[in-house]
Length: 452
Image (tube, rainbow, N blue to C red; front, side, top):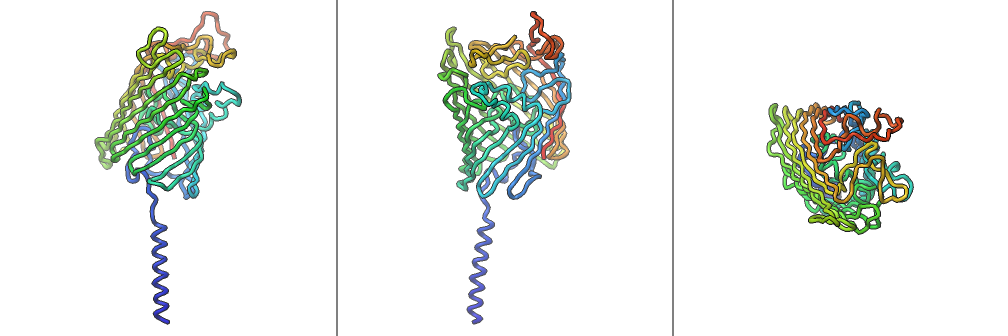
């Protein structure tokens, strides 16, 4: 009997050990063990705070004060998706939400309040196709999706909803970016996609994505065909990141035969790292190059003529960043340039210089003094900036930044503003009044960025 009991105990211990081993088998996690907190456009926190087995919460507040040396009388910022009002304290964005998961089912909901809930939707003219005011329906949701996680390779995620775009490298959330005012490359490419996303991680160091989406930063579709795209991200080690984003679609209202192609490519390198140093603790750079074109329905990509003008997009940006005193301080300098004949990706000016939908023809825009975006219209610009960050912990950043931007045509708000002679929308416009657009602006930005 004693031998039988001992044998039974051995079997039980064996099963217990097997069960414990099975329970402790870790799921493969992509990029696990790599420090990505240094990367431009990425979360700089070492670990989330509001986390549990099924929910990881997130709270972000982005407050800023920006001073324009042009000092427009209506305090309106022109040509920016990060800023809305000059010479005033503003809450650019206040976000609340989180990621949810249960046995493979996954979802994310982020709410958005502040000036960006108005600034971002204004750039999408697809909402004028059909009804239900999509710009109001979605303006308070920068991210919202549901999906499923498959335990294949290092994971496969299939999600449907609204996602942050990777085109232009910069994150939608300023707390993740090295600079506050994005360069032309990022500010004139999408901040969001609405559709289906398939994420695949075949190895620990590689991510491949496929997108089927409504279009180029559009809540709805301009034509019958959806947009298609994808992302490839490769990190051979934690000090290097390579990524490419590519897109194909038809995004000109009422012009279904005009295609759009865009390619966005970035390289990030951290070439010095001594996190315990009280002197220089980290140095890195990020570089991005974008090219694309539109073709069909009266335009061609390159080598255009008078009858069929060229319609393309070329841009690049480069930023260099140094951290100090155990990564509590950082100094960034950089900038970029862009050329976009036809202006099909140029962020339209604000106020009375912004085109409005034509009631008699929804494929056209009108306005008292609309900023022209016709085939053949030239536009080029460059920008440079430098900033200094104080980051006492992973949840707060204090930033001061100087920005210079210049365009080949009058584009930024001058002292006369873009609203009216008095700066108020209630003022009746004189017959000879027009928005005061100038070719150059300099500004200072003071920002406080919180994330937990």
